[in-house]
Structures are given as C-alpha cells and as structure tokens.
Length: 294
Image 1 (cartoon, rainbow, N blue to C red):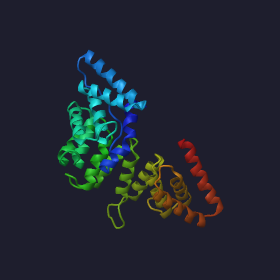
Image 2 (cartoon, rainbow, N blue to C red):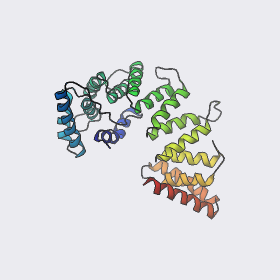
Image 3 (cartoon, helix red, strand yellow):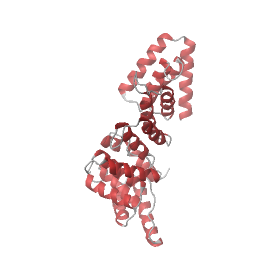
Image 4 (cartoon, one colour):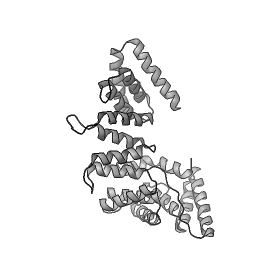
C-alpha cells in the first residue's frame, strides 16, 4: 500500500472527529508537472517526507513536506495541510490547512479539492459555503476521490445547499462505499431503511447494503444486519444468520462498548430460543467469517 494512502487512512478518525462526517480516504499523490528537473526534485522531497512519516519521524516529515510544498508540489501541500488540520507534528492551524488545501486544489489535486470542500461544508477555518463545497466535491470526484461522493451524498440527505434527494444521497454514498468506505455504505443503508410508515422505504436494498458494510468488518452494520434478519425485514426471517451477525458484532475489537452490549443482548435472546443445532450453526458461520477475514 502506498505510503500516502496509509497516511490518509490513519487520519480518518481525526478528520471524522473534526467534521462529524466521512472525512478521509486515500491521499491522492498526483504530481503537478513542471520541468523534468523540478519534477524529479519535488518527487525526491516527497519520497523523503513519506519515508520519514512512515518511520514515525514526524519532525523530519513535517520539514520535508514543507520543503516539497514550497516547491509547488500539490500532493505535499495536501499532506502538510492535513497535518495542520489535525495538529500532527505542528500546532493545529485551520488557516494554514485551508491555504495549503487551496493551493493544492488550484493545481487539480483531488485530495486538496476534497479537503477544501469539507472545510467549506462544515465551516472549519472559513465561512460555510455549500455551493463552493459542492463544486469542489464534484471536481474531486472527477479526480477519482471516492470520499467526496460520501460528502456530497450527505449534503443531498440533509438538503445542504441542494434539495433533499434521498435517491441521489444513497447513490453517492453507495459509490463511496463500493470503494471500501464502510461508513458510507452503512449510511446508504440507513437512508434506504427509513422509518416505519415511510412510503419510500427500501428494506431489501437496506439489508443488502448493511450486509455489504458488515462484510467490510463494520460493527454497527453487523448489529443492524442481525436485527433485520431477526425481524424478517428486507428478507424472510433467519435467526441463525441473525445470531451470526450478533456474535460477530459482540466480539469485534473495533465495536464500542454500548454497541457490543446491544449485540450480546441480542445473542442471549436468540440463544435462549434457538435449538442447540441452530446455535451451533450460527457459531460455525461466525467462525468461518472470522477465518476468512484474517
């Protein structure tokens, strides 16, 4: 996996904490071509920066990203912007982050466009502007940045600068989820499931999407899939499959304590009602899933 991709993936929690939304996927390290000599120099500085970051030498990484960013390398501007945004190795500074993302975005860097759009959407370091956010997300999507689909989907779900459009929201969230962002797939499933009495509910689609997110190892989706299979929502009831998902959610190392407690409670209720052979089958399915996921 490229170092820049790891860098972005490791920062997902920090970005999500700032914005309460899906905030990071792959850090696009696209080069802005100048002269061949300048390109080689910028590439070497970027290589040194990413090597230092991967080695845990954050001071060297910050200095190298800074040299590379000052040389006009858009990918380094984006990387340094991220560090200022979350305060890693530098003092947290929204204005610095905004300026670096802006400079990267002006060169067509998809991560810079995405990050700048996210700052505009949430009013971080700048006044909220849904119109600019939408334009930047569309540009980032054209550049192949999947997380921008998720942000745009959430805008359509909430009616942020655009009409509320559940179908379009689900579409964009699925596009993001299909590239390996389980939270986006989970959000698409949540919107498709809707609420009782909702004439536009799509329970079959919701179950399919919850299962897809669960297969990515996302504990909330495991719990939701278990509940839908237990209640016969979106498909005929299957308590063995429900117990499988409850067991997986209860034991998942990334599940928060409250979620795991809910999953354990669901598993206990099914254990009390299912015959021994059904309980054994559910546990065998859960074990097979865990083996395949390793």
